[in-house]
Image (tube, rainbow, N blue to C red; front, side, top):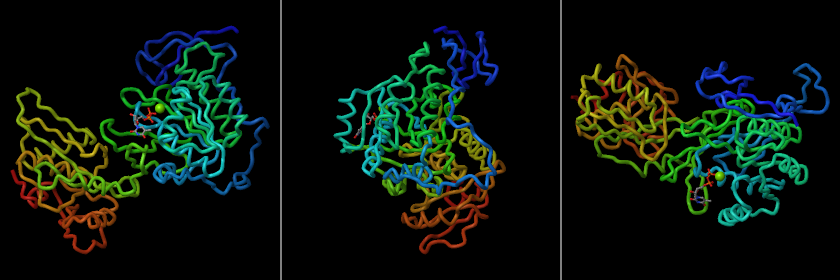
Length: 454
Ligand code: TYD
Ligand code: MG
């Protein structure tokens, strides 16, 4: 077959017939890589159905009662928006070793036990390896089929033979189309195979999970077009040396992207953590300077997070400012507010801040907690015992209201806190009994209330 050479951007997937130093579409430098493709291959030629499509008044389009299959893993269903939508394509990204294969094998088993056939395609592991893991996870449903292959044709053949209602491809970077001469994992291979699988999913109403590798900086490896093609993009995150795992939706055509699922990795695989706050409240470093319990929201769920800070004298000409698990930009802003509006000085101190337990939080409602943690560490004085905090901090040093005040207060009460510090103007109609409220209008006022004046 005649093959031609094209240059494809690894960032956005756009192509050009000649090499360019800078991608004309996304503007990235050095991302155009050469790939050889057969003259007649074109992902856009993949037809979704055989019959020519006809326009119809929207109101006459048959509306399938939204029927979702439960995976049997509550935390996964929650992130998916209440279960699997038939024929949808879900991309699951995450660093190697984080537990993607484990999660999907557990889900596959449950889905197979529910009655339908499930096909698991592994391009990374041998049948023996998968079997070993499955034995350990007790995931040996007779309706769960395994195919260890990387050729997209073999995958499509197996789908025709098994007729599964759920297909899992682990990973999309390992499957390839032999008719294309470019290497597996390359932009056009990944795009072509994903397009084939997506067409198959829509045509045969097979819910398809694609596992995707991520690069060092956490983005999905391969073209960004992959994210546009699929219905749902999930990221599985966590620290490797910590057992806590968090599943987030980065995109979801069938649900909210605000929900997270929390898991703990153990000997028997992933265990759902239905009450993450309790998990974190075990970690409470109460009475330690620099440690502040903060009530954040993850989706519709309140979540207790421990914000910690360490402020130490610096010998560096430019002192360190390091935030782990927090929004770096907001952290820098909080420090500036503390200096300018509350009169604290950090110019000769290194400042480190983070969350205990490896969960990352980006919510502005953490600001007040970060400010108090940093001040508490600088002055080496702990916060009043039994106090939880939430509130956004503005550039003028004001403490701004945040949403869901009542839900957050209820959570603080449930976890046994005796006092909650919140924005003065935060709406919180009913506070739980036994919880004293400290309403503050500014960072300065918050520091005074906690006995943390400079
Ligand atoms: P895996 O699902 O293979 O990760 P990924 O597919 O994202 O690369 O998970 C690998 C890690 O999980 C590995 O370090 C071992 C650990 N693990 C457990 O701790 N308990 C278990 O029951 C299983 C199956 C794996
Ligand atoms: Mg894997």
